[in-house]
Image (cartoon, rainbow, N blue to C red; front, side):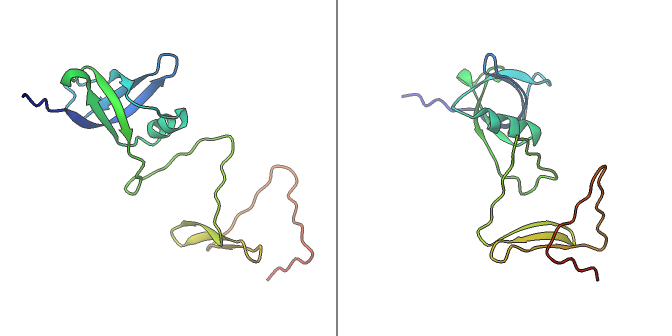
Length: 144
């Protein structure tokens, strides 16, 4: 009995043609030195593919009959620990934290506290601008 080895590589999706479900893919050791059009090997949501394109996420690429000119996308690795930037595009984005939600960059942060309804922003400088009306509403407003 002959065992056939499967060739798999890491790669990235560069473009998506939704009309015929094909992807422009580049991968490690690409002998053509240019991206290749390939197929989708399992069910992915359009949003997952777009997220992989926008953030250049690593993907598992396999090949039909081990032919490096016939790539198939079989997995998208959504680990972004070492990425320098993450892009999320959507009509609406909701981030939820049971107790708190913290947005942080360096020493600057904004914390949303669910228990008491407070929002705390910490920074060395805070700028707030409005092209039109800038409303500040509150039962009490304290300045320094």
